[in-house]
Image 1 (cartoon, rainbow, N blue to C red):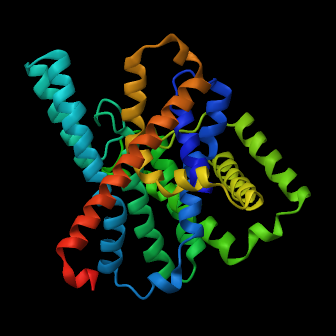
Image 2 (image 1 turned 135 degrees about the vertical axis):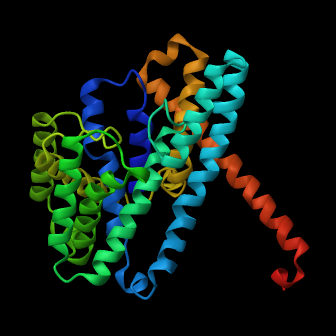
Length: 324
């Protein structure tokens, strides 16, 4: 459910007409939330039994395979076919295709580098961040010092230059701190300890003050503002979301969005651009725009899930051993 809230905030944050104040609030914790959850759910006992190669394979299957599948679908549909139909064949067209192809291999987030699939940068980033988390938790004793150094290194790199490293390694350094904090919160039962109303109020005040006194955060653009405020806002916002989902207990819509957050992250810009191409004045209202995008993404995901189920059934019918 928390991931469901997170992906809905991602969709809302991408709406062009969303108010600046709301966008600043969303961006202060919606990406840190995913890193925090990843660390919170990280099972050291399970993964410490895996070799580095085995862990890389498991994370690649989870993040990198979908990254390239979704990335190349968007590349061919929008970077090749749509551009050809819209602009025709030319030297500029070939340059655009080359740039999109390089951007996909490099994982250079941004609309000019990735064809209608810019948010995919997150998948390579979290892949690298989880590899760092795995290695540090398995091989280092003073883990907090390593993650502190990683966070400082990621921040100073963003200050010195905005040129992204391949697969967003520089952002992953910052992300691992949120993962480690999430992991420690799980280990020390922090959610149970701060569930009282006075602690919730304190967390809310910390989030609000962090947003008010910090600049707008954007992980993809390497804009971290005041790093202390960025971490305090990201952590307090993430804990608040988890506390809210604990109170909700169950929500089928949020669980649906959460289970399919990876697919929605991959296709959210495609749906956004389709909505913008409609050029309907009614969609200038950011709430209506957000609702339309959420519905279209849900229909797309349901279609993909249905196709996968049909293919699985066909495979089982052709394989008597599997049926047995």
